[in-house]
Picture 1: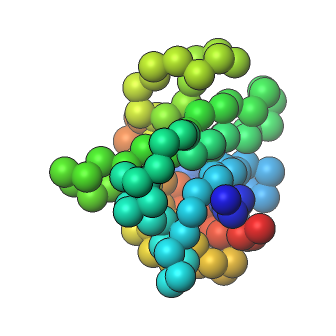
Picture 2 (picture 1 turned 120 degrees about the vertical axis):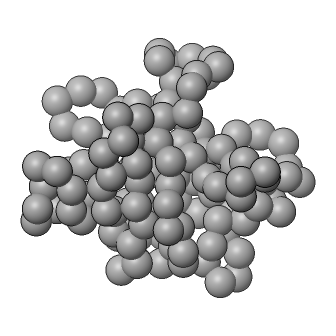
Length: 121
C-alpha cells in the first residue's frame, strides 16, 4: 500500500505551516489518486495511520471509512497495542492525494488544519 505523508500547511499556531507536524497514512488509492472505499470494503486488515507531532512519541492508529456518510477519519490508539479507540480526526476535502494537493483534517476539539500532501510512496 502506498504511504501518504501529509504536513501541516496552515492552521492555528501555524500560519506558515510546519513540516514536522504530520500524518502518515498507508492506504490503497484509486487510479485517480483518491482513497478507495471499494478496497476498504473488500479487504480485511487495518490501514495504518500515525500522527507525528514534536514533543511526544508518534501516535499509532488506523484509517476508517463510514459508508453511511462516505467520510474518512483517523482513529488513534491510546497505547502501543491496537485496541478500540474513538475516532480522532475527520478528514475533509480528501480529493486527490498527490504531492502538492491539500486536505483538511478536523481534530477532536473542532480545530481544523490544512495539510499538504508531500509524498506518496
